[in-house]
Length: 169
Image 1 (tube, one colour):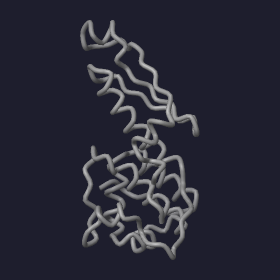
Image 2: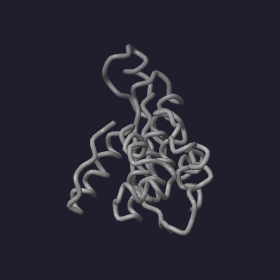
Image 3: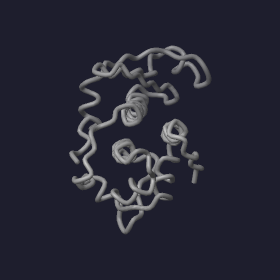
Image 4: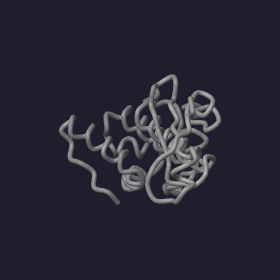
């Protein structure tokens, strides 16, 4: 399986339109008078993400970019081939069956996307996807639980197939 180049932060930023605006709320004069809120729109897909909780444009742009990458990971499925191996990124993050990732790490969207691609390719069979990825079903559920939207997406697809929902870990 090819690396998730579509989730490369630099590439996503190049493919996105960025706007800065003001937002009201707590944070003092800087928040109310300076355009620190960042809104990113990914031109190829139309997906949008924004951030306004930080005090600077650069921090909000970084948070919005992270949110946009996760939105892409949840929305876009890549072709999956059971004869391929998991990506090198997956292999570096999954050791001895355990997925080592922090909720704020830059690799999280790409790992979630790869796991969702494998799950989709396996007909939403969690055991088959986890076997192909070299991990356990509980580790995949734990990965999906990092972002509640990922777990909701998996459970929605499982409901459509008449499968029981996964409980967060």
